Length: 339
Image (cartoon, rainbow, N blue to C red; front, side, top):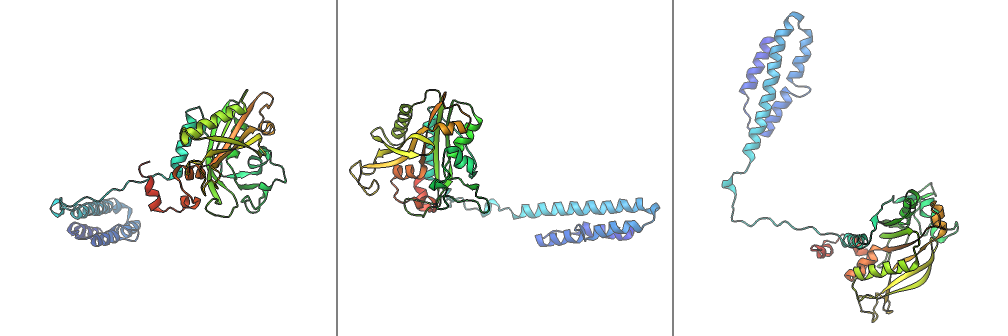
């Protein structure tokens, strides 16, 4: 046994590395689970106890030499594969390092958050898969409201109480349930609705909602906040108008239009030749919503608003097809490299 091991040590010492394939063969022969070392260690069991100590020294030497030979061989191959300076033509132009671009929706989302951040709004997030309470019931949706219908909502199979959220208003509920007023938040995120995909609609889109709850909050506060937003997002010449509307979670409710910045209010296909484009819905938080979230509606009031980020981006960059935002066309995205 001792002679056998000495012979193997000589074989390891004599080994010279010339290729990766040769080095791998050496590793498999000596150091793999079915290699020579594994075989030698298994044979140690049959050696007389009095001789094991001496034989063990030779086995350990074989193991150490094989591992060292493998390590040195790998280093030699790696260093020999490095390209020397003599092989480099320093006069050749370098490979261009193209700059990446922010997605236009990310740019608009960032700017909206920045605008409202200047007046004290912080960002809050919530899950995209929601239960009925946070997505509908707490927001004062009646049981027979059309938004609960399968035509508008993606419900999770086998559980009608769970659905993909249809708006980020669910985040407002979660914040009001866990936070005492004053509350001033923005809730950005993806939402999902079972709609036909077209140039003006999609089954998923990005929404951002705002909520302000405190003592003495009025509709006048809401209007001034949104005037400020419109002029910061577009320009100081942007005109704003409010139209009465209905939402279950706000009362009174309104939709806000801005003067079309594509045609300057003269009329075009984007504004349907009216000179105005709707950009968001808003209103005073319904007392039932406050009470559902354990907030005293006699002491506190608040307003909420919500807008589609895609709609704002389309107006800002004069894009006429909503679908292009999710097509990942590099030619389109490269236009936003410097933003």
